[in-house]
Image (cartoon, rainbow, N blue to C red; front, side, top):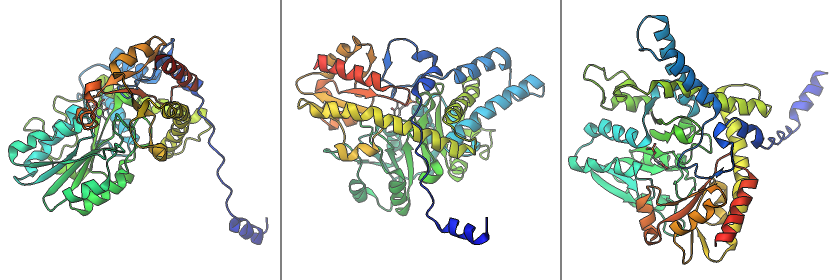
Length: 427
Ligand SMILES: Cc1ncc(COP(=O)(O)O)c(C=O)c1O
């Protein structure tokens, strides 16, 4: 090729990237032993099932490596390496460094640990903002700060859209604001807030953010650096992993926060100083299996290995596209019924929804409807989902909260159709 040809080529508009192939959901389902059987599992916001790769990693650790870590003998070193690899895999999942992720039994426990760690840095009269939309995890954890004279303020959700709006945060921000705690996607609404924009606003006010990413992380790529957050919590058992919670903290914040481990564990030892009693060894080691599963999905769909970040981007893009296909018919069905009220914004908000749909039916209690759907072997759920303040704020306690359908990428369109048929019989 002549050099001027090359010049012409590079000046031409670059072709659009080829469209991503649809998710091969049958391939995906084969990776999850618990998906065999007749039940359609649509209660995933409570917890997802596990791919075989995670089960294999936990089993391998327990059958071959469960010795004391930190010693010099080879098996001990191998055990330590497996735990470190699990932490590294979890950190890569959110684009953090391994020493920026605190692993603990759950998000609820991790946020309480974080509160105890941050408390010594707060003075009487300092202010912390929580919402009334969040799961109680990211509200209740902060309330004991009042015992130190810290003022707790509530960022109220928009009563029509059931979302957090910056306008309502604005009057609460002030010179004493130290921390704003809010949810990425609310577990009863499924609407994704613009965490990066909210964080920029909070940082401009001189405060930090603590984001609950539990209901978001199973569906979309979490990149804590791109979001710019200070603290970000998620529950790995809802992201195709074992029952562990992950708390990200920007390194400088973790270094400055008070350790929660023994007195001789130095303040420089992050994240260990927050992991009193150590992490769960076998489950931490099994986290490599989550990365292996996501890598297998990428390979199956033609992804070239590339770096971890681009691989995760591709896989979560596949998940997102598939989830939108699942969500559309369910929302269309529910919205077409005059007796149904879908919680959350109208169709204009659909692009920002993860496939978690909560609704109420006029004149029916949520608790009365769900057992009727059980008969079609579709697993859904009713209640407040520990977002007690949100359900109360919506005035829904008296009717037993909402019916919630929560799908993930391993659900199928056929399952959605079965659910719709079951709802049609029940309503
Ligand atoms: C949005 C949200 N935040 C926090 C939690 C609490 O998570 P964990 O069970 O890990 O404490 C849940 C659990 O359902 C949740 O849905």
